[in-house]
Length: 184
Image (cartoon, rainbow, N blue to C red; front, side, top):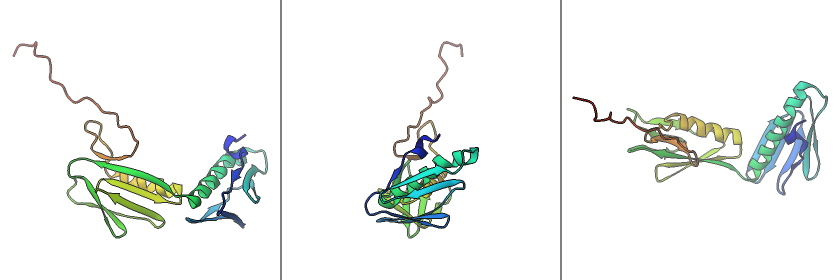
């Protein structure tokens, strides 16, 4: 039994959910998302809630049950209020600049990195070191944040690189000089 799938998904005011063949169309104040329904599931849409349940008690339908419920829940939350991730750039001379539909990153490489912003994603840059990524699709927001972070992951000695806002970077101790007890 799926713990997530058993709970009904509440539809907030201003959000509408329609079933269009094998797709669910979810419209809200921030935009519209379409989700493809996973196989072997029954989705019931009522006035203020959505329930997902498996058609048969077999392994694949039980596996899809919680996944589909999470996808619907994230889509409903995304069209009501956007998802956001914040990245912070640390390091001397490291910075980001917004250039139209591109983010230009200077991360200590010979050439700057140009990253094309995908459709449906908004990027804001504050003080050249804070990148705020937002959008209605949780998966896309996380993917864009991960791709930008992958250009220069934080290193463990000084913490230079790109990291998430609340990410804890475990620091390592640097090399230490050997004791002065030896004869030289």
